Amino acid sequence: MEKNCGFDTKISQNLAKIKHKIIVLSGKGGVGKSTVSANLAYALSEKKYTVGLLDSDFHGPSIPKILGIEDKKPTPNDNGFDPVSVSPKLKVMSIGFLLQDNDSPVIWRGPLKMGAAKQFIGDVNWGDLDYLIVDLPPGTGDEPLSIVQLIPNSDGAVIVTTPQDVALVSVRKSINFVKKMNLPVIGIVENMSGFTCPHCKKSVDIFKTDGGFKASMDLQVSFLGKIPIDPKIVLTGDTGEPYLIKNSSTDAGKAFVNIVEKIEQIVNKGR
Amino acid sequence: MEKNCGFDTKISQNLAKIKHKIIVLSGKGGVGKSTVSANLAYALSEKKYTVGLLDSDFHGPSIPKILGIEDKKPTPNDNGFDPVSVSPKLKVMSIGFLLQDNDSPVIWRGPLKMGAAKQFIGDVNWGDLDYLIVDLPPGTGDEPLSIVQLIPNSDGAVIVTTPQDVALVSVRKSINFVKKMNLPVIGIVENMSGFTCPHCKKSVDIFKTDGGFKASMDLQVSFLGKIPIDPKIVLTGDTGEPYLIKNSSTDAGKAFVNIVEKIEQIVNKGR
Image 1 (cartoon, rainbow over the protein chains, first blue to last red):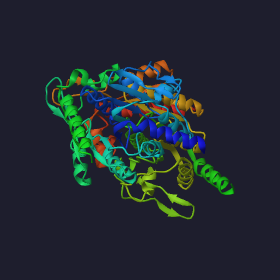
Image 2: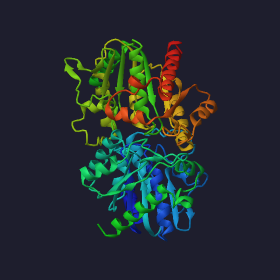
Image 3: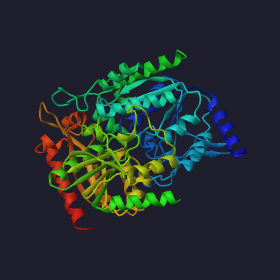
Image 4: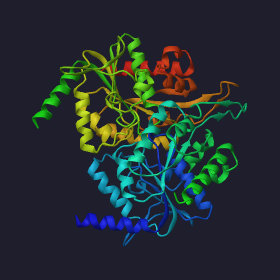
């Protein structure tokens, strides 16, 4: 019990020096949640904010791969770990750094997972941060629940979805999940929204469009923007370089930049 | 304890009349696992097999939507439930049928979930089946673990992935997960593999290609085939009609049909 209390205090202390905490979530996996988290963190760090990115996806920690820091390790010290620095303004901690073998599945039962999550979050020495971006495990199960409970007083949640109806069922679930957690909704990002053929420049709605926008109207939450499909997003994710480094002027890049600005505005309005 | 034993017996009895049990899984969500499961079940039922489809994804049960049976309910009787009949040869049970409100997230802690999974699987009266296709929750956490443990002696696992490197990290995890469960690997399906522009007919590798194939070589498991991106797969998923009903002669349709044949052959070789 004492150990738990100690840990709770440690978590509070570590999170106390962080101005804004933003939770990024999605009701289902594979919608680009980690890509959005990584590029949001990168874009904020380029605006001279000090940013931390916490990848808490126990079963599919993809942030180290997306940012090209798979071989890095957080530095242990007396109080826990110092996160990995991607640049002077961007620090990253991922559960992936702590898994011994990248190919092994994490088969943890609930209570063990909660303990691991507590230790994982309590042990990171972020120092002073303007923003902490938390890439949550997908879904609305006990993993995202555990993580959200460990990060109190966050500014709110950014919900990432793809545009088709099947995916939108999970947006509604996510919003209800967020409300049950008493988290404010920052807004919805519609990813993989439309595609322009690079050969003939005509558009194709591979996963349809506007579903996220419609859901935001229905559910009366902010709509942050649509990011079109760009094969370079996949390529940069695989080569470990944030998409926005070289692509801020493409359609998808501009969409990303607008979304980051909206999030910055909403969060700084002090809502 | 007695209640548990009773349930285990009930599960065994209900599963005893099923010739082949195939587990469909993916290390991450959003790769098309449910679309593959639904079309595999549909295609087998069209071959005059009697097929059951079990949608065990607690947090994102999408099979009812994909098959257009969201408003149906399983029929309760003295021994549990009769599954929903999509056609005389295709029966479906989904955890989605049992959730009161489609928009509500299922926030269940581990042990509660295991109990619910037991009851959910033990209570379905499938009758005699040639095939049971089990659409597992995504990932390698305790949800898929619980379900696999409740369905013993299955023929093996079909692993669905998208082609990019980030997704493939999770294929390796899935294969290790399957091996730890002592399940045979039936093979890998590479979904969303390449795209032909409907306007200019040129190809674009939106999510790259061949990653699933390369993983199957590396990990020495069977490769079942590549399914190209077809916006109609999304549309049919949203309108509740299995893609193969009207599209068995498209590139994606032919790929699906070949994959079903390979699975049928592998499973019937009695491996």
